[in-house]
Structures are given as structure tokens and as C-alpha cells.
Length: 97
Image 1 (cartoon, one colour):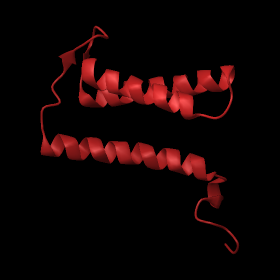
Image 2 (spheres, helix red, strand yellow; image 1 turned 60 degrees about the horizontal axis):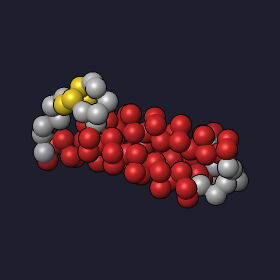
Image 3 (spheres, one colour; image 1 turned 90 degrees about the horizontal axis):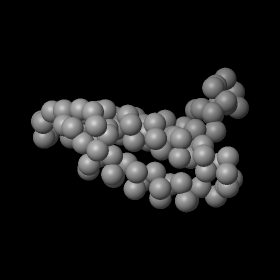
């Protein structure tokens, strides 16, 4: 494997690798949070359904993906706008959903 980098075997770009590293970091952070502060009991929020911490993480990541895709379809780059919207969205989901 001469001349290949760590992520070249799968033809990943650095942004793709960073995205998956972020997902792994989120899962690790959620695990540490649950170990240090148990209590991910389901609660009913503005979504009208009972969600746990893991559910809210999944909903925020899925919604953020749609925010980014809609932004790319409507406005293109740069992606600072959808990043701000996605962070606010995730905060709202974790706080009130």
C-alpha cells in the first residue's frame, strides 16, 4: 500500500472523515453523559412523543442533515448559515423536545 493515506482506501475526503469523527464523538459524549448522570428517562416535549437523550440526539442529527441539504439546494455554499441553524435546532430539540 505505497502512496496511500489513512483514509484513501475508501476514497473519503477529509470533510467526510471529520463528519464521521463528529458522529463518533457525539456517541462517546452521550455515553459519558449517561454514565456520569443517569436519568435518560423518556419525557414528553414539544414533539408530542416521549423521547430519551438518544432519541433527541438522533432527531437533531437527522434534522440537521435535512437543514444542510435544503441549504445546499437553495443557496449553495458557504455552509456557515445552516451550521448556525442546525446548532439552534439541536439546542431546541435537547431542551424542549
